[in-house]
Length: 601
Image (cartoon, rainbow, N blue to C red; front, side, top):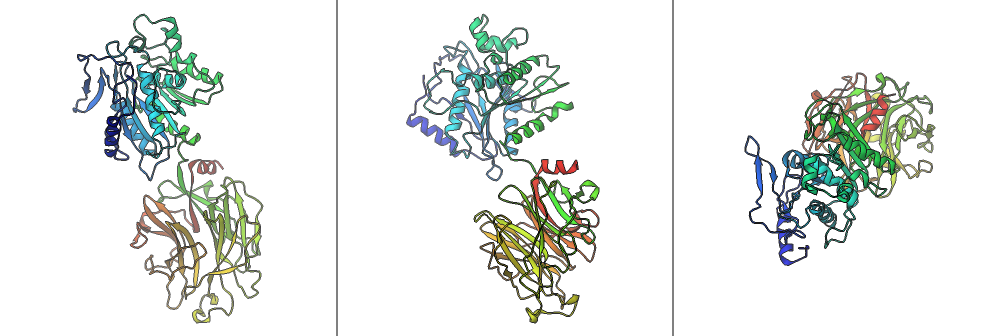
């Protein structure tokens, strides 16, 4: 019976949707609520369940009703990518936990939605043509997921198929037979996967390398020459076959490795993107990997998905800082957890300063801009009226250093210190801001101590770092202020700043807010740091917390505080570790491969 849209069909689908719990196992939906195409009724053919030693469902056999278990990625992690997972079992049963639900949960951890396909076992008692039964299920599953993509927050152009063993044969069959007319669907979308993942797959029906159980169950005892060729999927590859990731072990005794090798060579001959990983050891049916090098194949798959941009690059933390007086230039440290930091390049400089009165590179601030480039500003001198600027594609090779005379129009400006950049994607504008003392300004907060510096925050804006707006006052909080760092927070901008008041001493970090990047900013909050002098705040999100790092400059060490709501703060200085001598830096998140390249420098 062909699938038709009926009130009952719509009701069943709607009830299933109500049961969805993102990121966890969800109620399965029946793929063919009105009966599968060309199905036969055999009341004595009843599904059987296999349990593990703990009484949990391990698999199924004698499957005659197709189900789709839905695992939607959590909203905060969702990449828009989805994978339909086909467990293996020789077309006689399905190892649905090990090669289905467990895999789906792993995909969810990457922000990928997963759909475990409990496909029908080919059988003459329940199908007029058992050879096409599993393919019908796979095609319809792909069409359903693609048709419901908007409802499930999935990109319809980022839906793949994955299969293990005989499930790999089904996945490769869909990848090479997606246009075969094997039933009539009400979904008017393509069944072609955007990519396929084949794990120790059965590919060929050639008796020399096939899995004979899978071949017999799918094609029958006396398969025709036509079907043997048709379902030897290495012979059906063409230029439209989707990009493919294959894994296999050399010693696989159930499904010889030649299945994957021959499919890979066919893909290569048709110039289809493909990647294959062959492991020296590992038994058939190892699932996500259990021992030796094969246990790392999920990491290889993750890297492949990132390379093809089905999931974003894995990010890590990078810290730009200076040492000493800033004479030798730019230093980097990195961290995987945001707490323990290690220097790169043996703590040597990555860029030597060349511009400004003193040719220093203090307070280096780096952001990634809307153009994909890294943009850096820094303090070039104790007494100059401008700042340094350069950009880079990879944080290794930098543009020509540029001196930007942002306070040249103010003859009484004593300095331009601790510049930073923030990018506003709404206006595609960069704001560069810094602290300056202008002699004679704000005498009410003037102190005779510390050379009489009395800073306020100033800024310019630019779209191309060639033309800049006129310099304007950014923040006048009623006290000596320096070291501002601004982050986007929801619909607002939050400024972390140092209260530089000397008499009576404040020397702490506070917060102010604005609805626009250029302000106006609110009055400063109470201090978020403790009973010590702190400067150079820089902030990022770590595991759902705002973490603000700062230089405890009188203690010659780095400190940090964290908060979930920017209101209640916890001092975590005793939990972090930075390279010795780290001074006033900026934290940013970068793709892991960026840090990998820096490590090789």
